[in-house]
Image 1 (cartoon, rainbow, N blue to C red):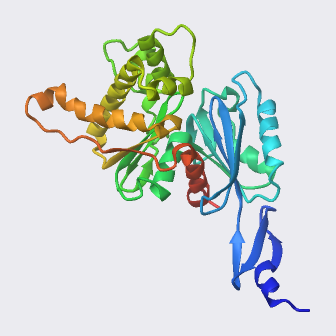
Image 2 (image 1 turned 90 degrees about the vertical axis):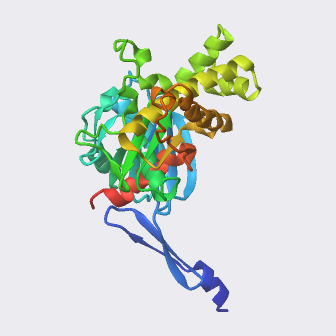
Image 3 (image 1 turned 180 degrees about the vertical axis):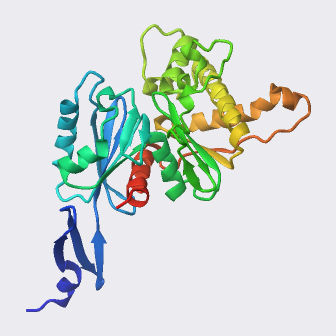
Length: 337
């Protein structure tokens, strides 16, 4: 017996795209939908996150594995990737977010500390040849900025900046609604900025020390802890209201606020958004906003009666998923066919 209702919801057929990916077409309410699927990676020094996503940036599945180490090889690195790609047959493309200075036009990581064996390799070409689908790679901080411009908390501004707090500090700069990469793809690499010109040879003089490791060190120092702790433990002390842990957080956000203010002196953006895992901690944003206001109490211009503009600060909408979403945006809208 012909079942019109069943036909309405279960008519299905497949076709093959130019790269061999399987596209799914299913009728729903008498309309035919095309659902493309993309495998998106967010590489980091500790974990390699991945997600199966569609073109609307919906995350269909996601997971993570331990990242290969600095002493691994190209072969062992791709062995990890192989194990993930094999789980998702029929994908339509691969998008990558990675730390490092990345020539996203050529698909080459020019400088990368966490995976030195990938440096200067034609990475997107290697992915395309190995997996038979188009591929792209973008810097993680710039990917986060793209995500926030596309669907996040920078979508309503023309000029903005993203600070991505991870092991180090990265980010992206958006001017006139467009991500700025610079001639050497170096724009937004805040970690290399010196904030203490009196000691330029010290690693503590650079913005890189404002990563999560810098906060952990401050908590350990203020609390006089002998045993090493991680970020989760640091915020356990902070959220419990431990006085010395809160002092450490305030010192950390004071340093971060002054860095954000200094960058805003150059860019004068409408909004700065903070991303990375610790950006989900409510006390971080609360303390950072207070630290921004506290600049008025010690900056010579303010003390001299000059009212300089202070940056508006918020969190990234997508927190830890920002890199994934931005990498997908780069693949879909900034990579040539």
